[in-house]
Image (cartoon, rainbow, N blue to C red; front, side, top):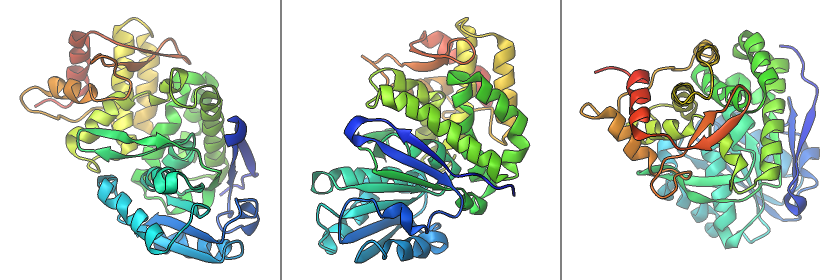
Length: 370
């Protein structure tokens, strides 16, 4: 693997600003943790898959900075992003008499990061936390920007808070242990930035797809860096998703419906977003916002990443109706009207509604037949 030079991307949010450190072999670098808020105790929240790989290394580094370092191991999977699992974190914090200076560390993928952040936002009304993402999806998206939360059976990420970490540490070496399916799922969140914000990046992804799939560290490092730069720019202007930040949900309105409709964990988040991007792109084309050749270019790239380009059936009787029903329970919906992130010409995005009849046509065309 080719080497990657260390990079730092700054999230500029006034007194809540923080750095995203992107490098290899940094998870156990004690120097990265010396500037954290003063505290005697730290809690590493991880899951049953990641804990055996990286928890001991991180704990050893933190023991140079903290007197006590506890490890809380959660079950692994989107289906466990629930109140019940969240309470395991609170049980550990209360059981160890953690105070409001205790620093939480989210060691894992998006599920661990979202739940740890929500626990940090809630425990004693707010304690500091650090994101240590170990999946590509978490490094390029979910660990950055302060969205935290859990799922509800009726909707994904509908319960949560905006709460920023004090630092994000992306160790590219952790991507070596990712299953191929998880790597592809992460690439969905990399790809999404191109059609909505940066055509040059889209072209770069097309050129470097084989290197990304082969886990070339220079390629992965640049993908993480550029994705974080785009997200940092957006979040810096719209931290709480009042407007611009919603464009980062390209493909997610359809994708969240897939996850909720199939049952959390049946499809990985990135897989659902991939199929959702195809539907959103096709809807953009039907509305006359983008040409068909650009849509086909995007679909071809998603397919090359090893991701689904056809959505699943969520109902045998009225598949499109079930999608629409689930999409009405979406944070972008207003007054019952579904809002979609659409491609408003290559490299730009718009958030707007669409006629139900047209949405039905797109879903029927983009999903598995009976």
